[in-house]
Length: 318
Image 1 (spheres, rainbow, N blue to C red):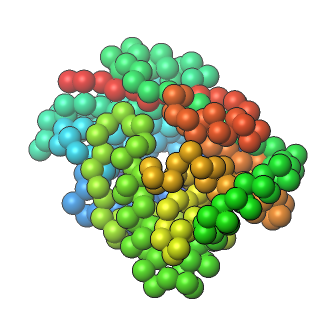
Image 2: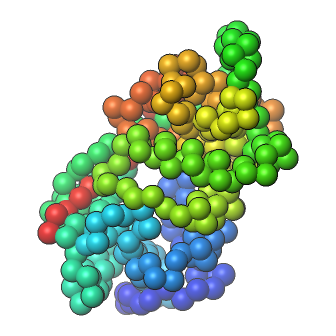
């Protein structure tokens, strides 16, 4: 018998959710530590509810509905449903979705838009969303780099040119030692860069505390793999790395350069240094995703990243 009930915080429940997600997303499922951290830093006034689907004592799916802090539209909600492949096409996802929809209908803020996402090759998930009136609004191409095969030698001239311009690339721990204002500078950089990130919604600025908790203190963030570009002490770009759910696999969290410094090879230099870090530390692969029209996708392919999948953003206007 299938039971839909509220999520019960505890190690066993988090581990069970991780196993379901890892069955769907083998290389980039959220770790237990990451799930716990995300729950712990959620603002108390942020709308969020999560349910789990249990069949014969086994957690087989989970789902949530939320309003992330960066949403500017009051009635916009994010829906997230993960169903173990072993129980697909048996009404489990429908039961979770119906619970979410009923909750929204009875909530204090009536929804004006629902947002969801899935991988392009997950045909069951695609049909699920389309059947319920969701329409695709954006597509991210997922690429993967064979780290041991990467050769940094062709890029050494680029670093010589940048050094001659007074631009340095250092790691986050080095920045923390050099500059007591490192957090504020990274936050200001992120705030400016987010204005150019293709998103299916209009984002609003998050707080400094949220930035620190979400990115700097995130359990999967590799501080030594967080590369920062400096021009005479000013932070002008960065590129981050995160641990994946499989040993030896990393993910690029974000890469960006201020508008005034673009078209000078800085993003390339940041990513090369990050790849060198991964290679030196024995990692086998780096995954990343870019909106299909974003110039960063072409840069990644030039560095040797190969397409492996695509993630689709869906929206349902109400």
